[in-house]
Structure formats: structure tokens, C-alpha cells
Image 1 (cartoon, rainbow, N blue to C red):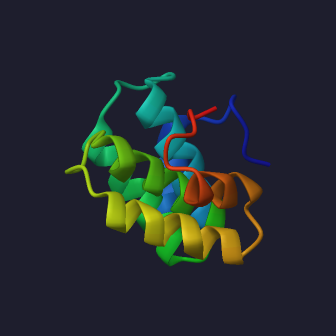
Image 2: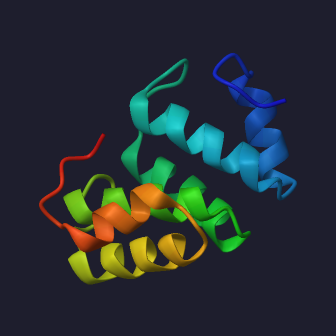
Image 3: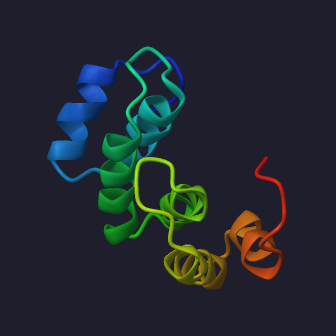
Length: 106
């Protein structure tokens, strides 16, 4: 089971072995600087890997980075597309972010 107590080195290994949940969890840890140095571009890359592997919540997380230009160039159109795709896959938070661009990120 992957959770907040997971070893970042093991998550990195699993991500490199194409485990989308590991990429998404490590992306969150890297974005927030939890147990690893904060690194926006690396978080974006990890979310991208997870998103492309079918982890819809990672697509939403990547959209947040694009909306605010955190680790990637700000790109509202790309953020909107990521939110729309994640929303279609049932991520309610993505639907709310797609429908209300001024919505605060929770």
C-alpha cells in the first residue's frame, strides 16, 4: 500500500517501473516538499507520467500546476484540458476546477 509513510526512494523505483500510483504519490511529496526537497518541475514530470498511465487524479494535480505556473509555464488552456479529462474519468475536484477557474485550490 502506498501512503504518506512510503519511502520516496521506493516510490521512485516503482515509478520508474511504470507504477502510476507511485508516480502520483511521489509527485505529491515532491510538490509539497514532504520528506524530499520541493521541486516543481520534477513534480510536474511525475504527475505527467501518472496521468499518461491512466491515473486521473494525477491529471488533475498536473492541471493545478499549469493553472498556477508552479514548476511549469502557466497555461490555462492546458490546465482546463487536464481538468476536463480527469472530470470525465470521475475526479470531482477536477470538475469543480474546470467549471470555476477562480476556485481556490483545496
